[in-house]
Length: 84
Image (cartoon, rainbow, N blue to C red; front, side, top):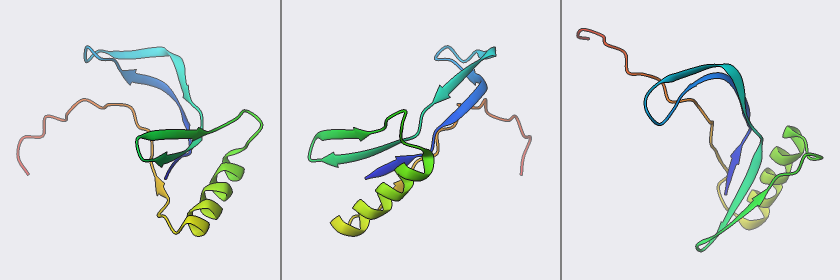
């Protein structure tokens, strides 16, 4: 079971390695429950970040499963740090 709090980015790296700026990309919060190979996603515009977090904690306790938090991040270019 995973929980992603959601984010809004104003720049990101696309699949070609180019930085995209000037717009916003929003990733909504969601709770994902995996049942074998089936993925059940809980997320609704009427459910807030706090409500999804609470639901994830309750289901985690009830099912005795660890709730993993997944933080969505933009792909960042590698830093050219000369040594370390």
